[in-house]
Length: 218
Ligand SMILES: [Zn+2]
Ligand SMILES: [Zn+2]
Image 1 (tube, rainbow, N blue to C red):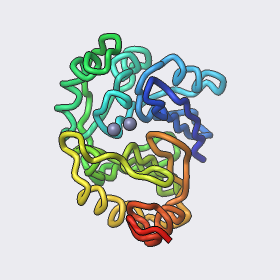
Image 2 (cartoon, protein in one colour):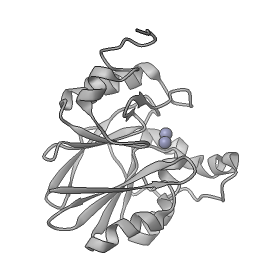
Image 3 (tube, rainbow, N blue to C red):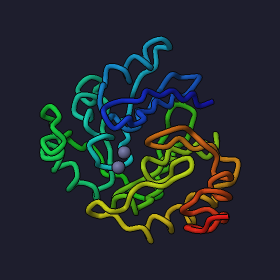
Protein backbone atom coordinates (compact mmCIF):
# COMPACT_ATOMS: atom_id res chain seq x y z
CA UNK A 1 0.00 0.00 0.00
CA UNK A 2 1.23 3.49 -0.87
CA UNK A 3 0.43 6.30 1.54
CA UNK A 4 0.51 9.82 0.08
CA UNK A 5 0.85 13.08 2.01
CA UNK A 6 1.66 16.58 0.86
CA UNK A 7 2.48 20.15 1.82
CA UNK A 8 1.88 23.26 -0.27
CA UNK A 9 5.18 25.12 -0.20
CA UNK A 10 6.79 28.37 -1.31
CA UNK A 11 5.47 31.52 -3.01
CA UNK A 12 4.26 29.55 -6.05
CA UNK A 13 2.18 27.20 -3.89
CA UNK A 14 3.83 24.05 -5.23
CA UNK A 15 2.83 20.61 -4.01
CA UNK A 16 5.62 18.76 -2.26
CA UNK A 17 4.60 15.10 -2.10
CA UNK A 18 5.67 12.28 0.14
CA UNK A 19 4.75 8.76 -0.97
CA UNK A 20 5.55 5.94 1.44
CA UNK A 21 5.19 2.19 1.52
CA UNK A 22 2.65 1.54 4.27
CA UNK A 23 4.47 -1.59 5.44
CA UNK A 24 8.16 -0.62 5.43
CA UNK A 25 7.89 3.16 5.90
CA UNK A 26 10.27 3.74 3.02
CA UNK A 27 9.33 7.02 1.28
CA UNK A 28 10.10 9.02 -1.84
CA UNK A 29 10.00 12.81 -1.65
CA UNK A 30 8.56 14.23 -4.87
CA UNK A 31 9.53 17.86 -5.59
CA UNK A 32 11.37 19.50 -2.68
CA UNK A 33 10.32 23.00 -3.79
CA UNK A 34 10.84 24.93 -0.55
CA UNK A 35 10.14 24.79 3.19
CA UNK A 36 11.87 21.42 3.45
CA UNK A 37 11.17 21.20 7.20
CA UNK A 38 7.49 20.79 6.35
CA UNK A 39 8.18 17.83 4.08
CA UNK A 40 10.29 16.27 6.80
CA UNK A 41 7.48 16.86 9.31
CA UNK A 42 5.16 14.81 7.09
CA UNK A 43 7.44 11.81 7.54
CA UNK A 44 7.94 12.18 11.28
CA UNK A 45 4.70 10.97 12.88
CA UNK A 46 4.92 7.62 11.09
CA UNK A 47 8.68 7.21 11.29
CA UNK A 48 8.98 7.17 7.50
CA UNK A 49 12.48 7.12 6.01
CA UNK A 50 12.98 9.28 2.92
CA UNK A 51 15.28 7.20 0.74
CA UNK A 52 14.94 9.03 -2.55
CA UNK A 53 14.27 12.57 -3.83
CA UNK A 54 12.49 12.65 -7.17
CA UNK A 55 12.32 15.95 -9.07
CA UNK A 56 9.61 16.07 -11.72
CA UNK A 57 11.46 18.95 -13.42
CA UNK A 58 13.99 21.71 -12.83
CA UNK A 59 11.90 24.80 -12.09
CA UNK A 60 12.69 26.58 -8.84
CA UNK A 61 9.28 25.97 -7.26
CA UNK A 62 9.94 22.19 -7.49
CA UNK A 63 13.68 21.90 -6.76
CA UNK A 64 14.45 25.08 -4.78
CA UNK A 65 14.76 22.99 -1.59
CA UNK A 66 16.66 20.18 -3.31
CA UNK A 67 20.07 20.85 -1.79
CA UNK A 68 18.56 21.24 1.68
CA UNK A 69 16.44 18.08 1.36
CA UNK A 70 19.45 16.13 0.16
CA UNK A 71 21.54 17.33 3.08
CA UNK A 72 18.80 16.71 5.64
CA UNK A 73 17.87 13.19 4.51
CA UNK A 74 21.08 11.88 2.95
CA UNK A 75 18.85 10.55 0.18
CA UNK A 76 20.00 10.67 -3.45
CA UNK A 77 18.38 13.26 -5.71
CA UNK A 78 17.33 12.44 -9.25
CA UNK A 79 16.07 14.39 -12.27
CA UNK A 80 16.04 14.04 -16.06
CA UNK A 81 19.22 15.30 -17.72
CA UNK A 82 17.27 17.49 -20.13
CA UNK A 83 16.44 19.81 -17.20
CA UNK A 84 20.05 20.21 -16.02
CA UNK A 85 20.16 23.70 -17.52
CA UNK A 86 17.26 24.71 -15.26
CA UNK A 87 19.13 23.37 -12.22
CA UNK A 88 22.25 25.28 -13.18
CA UNK A 89 20.12 28.41 -13.51
CA UNK A 90 18.58 28.04 -10.01
CA UNK A 91 20.62 30.84 -8.40
CA UNK A 92 19.62 33.11 -11.29
CA UNK A 93 15.95 32.03 -11.03
CA UNK A 94 16.03 32.94 -7.32
CA UNK A 95 17.53 36.34 -8.03
CA UNK A 96 15.01 37.02 -10.77
CA UNK A 97 12.07 36.36 -8.42
CA UNK A 98 13.70 38.24 -5.53
CA UNK A 99 14.02 35.09 -3.37
CA UNK A 100 16.75 34.36 -0.86
CA UNK A 101 19.79 32.81 -2.56
CA UNK A 102 19.18 29.20 -3.61
CA UNK A 103 21.89 26.64 -4.06
CA UNK A 104 21.63 24.24 -7.02
CA UNK A 105 21.48 20.68 -5.66
CA UNK A 106 23.96 18.01 -6.63
CA UNK A 107 22.35 15.40 -8.86
CA UNK A 108 23.02 11.82 -7.81
CA UNK A 109 21.18 10.19 -10.68
CA UNK A 110 19.75 11.16 -14.07
CA UNK A 111 16.61 9.11 -14.63
CA UNK A 112 15.33 8.13 -18.05
CA UNK A 113 12.01 7.02 -19.47
CA UNK A 114 11.00 3.51 -18.46
CA UNK A 115 13.31 3.30 -15.48
CA UNK A 116 11.86 1.58 -12.41
CA UNK A 117 12.69 1.58 -8.72
CA UNK A 118 11.08 0.36 -5.54
CA UNK A 119 9.68 2.30 -2.63
CA UNK A 120 9.39 -0.48 -0.06
CA UNK A 121 6.88 -2.96 -1.49
CA UNK A 122 5.72 -0.59 -4.23
CA UNK A 123 7.17 -0.33 -7.72
CA UNK A 124 7.60 3.10 -9.29
CA UNK A 125 8.23 3.82 -12.97
CA UNK A 126 9.59 6.98 -14.60
CA UNK A 127 7.60 8.29 -17.57
CA UNK A 128 9.30 11.04 -19.58
CA UNK A 129 6.55 13.60 -20.30
CA UNK A 130 8.24 16.59 -21.99
CA UNK A 131 6.35 19.74 -22.92
CA UNK A 132 6.24 21.95 -19.82
CA UNK A 133 10.02 21.54 -19.83
CA UNK A 134 12.21 19.25 -21.93
CA UNK A 135 13.06 17.05 -18.95
CA UNK A 136 9.65 16.91 -17.27
CA UNK A 137 8.86 13.43 -15.95
CA UNK A 138 5.91 11.79 -14.25
CA UNK A 139 6.19 9.12 -11.58
CA UNK A 140 3.86 6.12 -11.91
CA UNK A 141 2.99 3.46 -9.35
CA UNK A 142 1.25 0.80 -11.46
CA UNK A 143 0.37 -1.49 -8.55
CA UNK A 144 -1.40 1.33 -6.73
CA UNK A 145 -2.67 3.17 -9.83
CA UNK A 146 -1.18 6.40 -8.49
CA UNK A 147 0.57 8.98 -10.65
CA UNK A 148 2.58 12.13 -9.92
CA UNK A 149 2.46 14.52 -12.88
CA UNK A 150 4.55 17.55 -11.84
CA UNK A 151 3.55 20.54 -13.98
CA UNK A 152 2.58 18.40 -16.99
CA UNK A 153 -1.08 17.85 -16.06
CA UNK A 154 -3.26 19.63 -13.50
CA UNK A 155 -6.89 19.08 -12.51
CA UNK A 156 -8.63 21.19 -15.15
CA UNK A 157 -5.47 22.59 -16.75
CA UNK A 158 -1.98 21.86 -18.06
CA UNK A 159 1.47 23.32 -17.43
CA UNK A 160 2.56 26.47 -19.23
CA UNK A 161 4.73 25.93 -22.31
CA UNK A 162 6.04 29.47 -22.88
CA UNK A 163 9.23 29.07 -20.83
CA UNK A 164 12.54 27.96 -22.44
CA UNK A 165 12.28 24.28 -23.44
CA UNK A 166 8.47 24.41 -23.40
CA UNK A 167 6.54 22.90 -26.30
CA UNK A 168 2.73 22.61 -26.34
CA UNK A 169 2.63 19.91 -29.03
CA UNK A 170 5.04 17.80 -26.99
CA UNK A 171 2.96 18.42 -23.85
CA UNK A 172 -0.22 17.34 -25.61
CA UNK A 173 1.46 14.17 -26.91
CA UNK A 174 2.89 13.39 -23.47
CA UNK A 175 -0.54 13.61 -21.87
CA UNK A 176 -2.56 11.89 -24.59
CA UNK A 177 -0.08 9.18 -25.55
CA UNK A 178 1.71 8.47 -22.27
CA UNK A 179 -0.63 9.43 -19.41
CA UNK A 180 -4.24 8.96 -20.53
CA UNK A 181 -3.60 5.33 -21.65
CA UNK A 182 -2.74 4.48 -18.02
CA UNK A 183 -6.50 4.41 -17.42
CA UNK A 184 -9.44 6.57 -16.44
CA UNK A 185 -9.45 5.38 -12.84
CA UNK A 186 -5.88 6.50 -12.17
CA UNK A 187 -5.61 9.12 -9.45
CA UNK A 188 -3.00 11.76 -10.22
CA UNK A 189 -1.19 14.18 -7.94
CA UNK A 190 -0.03 17.32 -9.75
CA UNK A 191 2.64 19.93 -9.02
CA UNK A 192 0.03 22.55 -8.14
CA UNK A 193 -3.60 22.41 -7.05
CA UNK A 194 -5.82 19.47 -6.14
CA UNK A 195 -5.50 15.83 -7.15
CA UNK A 196 -7.78 14.39 -9.82
CA UNK A 197 -8.46 11.37 -12.01
CA UNK A 198 -7.18 10.82 -15.54
CA UNK A 199 -10.71 9.96 -16.69
CA UNK A 200 -12.03 13.37 -15.69
CA UNK A 201 -9.17 15.12 -17.53
CA UNK A 202 -9.54 12.90 -20.60
CA UNK A 203 -13.19 13.89 -20.80
CA UNK A 204 -13.23 17.52 -19.74
CA UNK A 205 -9.76 19.10 -19.53
CA UNK A 206 -10.08 22.36 -21.56
CA UNK A 207 -6.64 21.89 -23.18
CA UNK A 208 -6.30 18.15 -23.79
CA UNK A 209 -9.74 16.71 -23.06
CA UNK A 210 -12.23 15.36 -25.60
CA UNK A 211 -14.94 17.90 -24.84
CA UNK A 212 -15.58 20.73 -24.74
CA UNK A 213 -13.28 21.51 -27.62
CA UNK A 214 -10.56 24.00 -26.91
CA UNK A 215 -11.63 27.60 -27.36
CA UNK A 216 -15.24 26.83 -28.08
CA UNK A 217 -17.99 28.07 -25.80
CA UNK A 218 -21.32 26.35 -25.50
ZN1 LIG B 1 7.30 24.12 -13.71
ZN1 LIG C 1 5.45 24.54 -10.78
